[in-house]
Image (cartoon, rainbow, N blue to C red; front, side, top):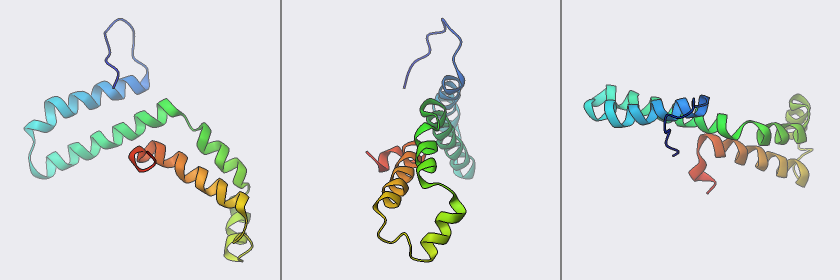
Length: 109
């Protein structure tokens, strides 16, 4: 986590980081039960949004481009035409990893 020193305006990801840190440090400890759960859920959503802003969608867009037309891909998968297609499998894996890096980075290491 980067600390904002107040000398320049934070970008969108920085604003989310500041808001999330404040939520976790100052508000969550004062909450109980359902309100605490909802605040932690909001903090998690803020972390995901922050990673999405910092990492951009380049890797996701590249993986989607490799897969081509989603309708045609779904039809090919349903018809069993992609069962042994290493290129499609690699593109699907790249897409899953790119999405996990944003939503669940611990899952991909």
